[in-house]
Length: 107
Length: 154
Image (cartoon, rainbow over all chains, first blue to last red; front, side, top):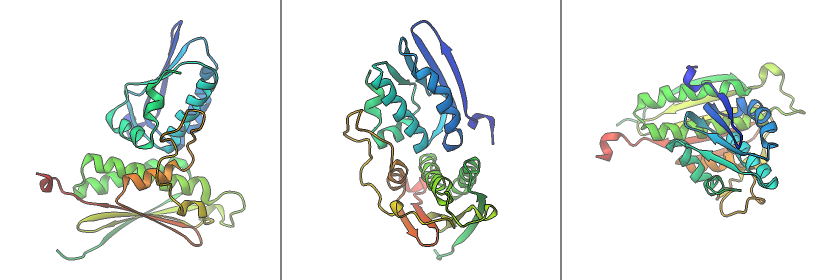
């Protein structure tokens, strides 16, 4: 599999914000890795949590399902969750499934 | 135009780490047939969803299939004007799969009401021209996309 498609996470933390850069293919195979990496970040309610999808090549219903559970967890904690730099092919799936309005609205 | 059918078959273990191999194979076949980038992206998601279901549900506890029999067979059926992808497992039949939600489970809901169950099947329906699910000694999903050649769009 080429390197571009390999799932990769990089986290940047500043005082008020935690940005996670998600790249490659976000699918069933990496669901466990993603959930484990996000769990502690979801709990950081004193700063906003952002997912940057600029280099995301692919997402499936497992990935979208994880976004849904992150949305719900942040909403329950009254903490901001932002999804930014959504590529057009990914945006199409977000629109199709109806998750887009939740991603563009602040908690 | 003759009704010639060409079939490429791929058999992989029913584990998540092989689904990307199915996508790469699909990409090769569909690109060679002349499908657009967008159509290939649609098919990649739909086929992965069918494979995910097989990986997640076909061989759950209680399945009588031995580990070496826990595989997914993907058949790419090339026709002149369409590509059908048949995803078949020999695990237990999942009845729930035959009822496709007509709308996404996320549309028009409040944040505390949303859930992602049924999303995979919804996406298959939304992304392909035809989806057929057969449950009988395992599950067989047939996904069909019509080929619109780029010169026909001009």
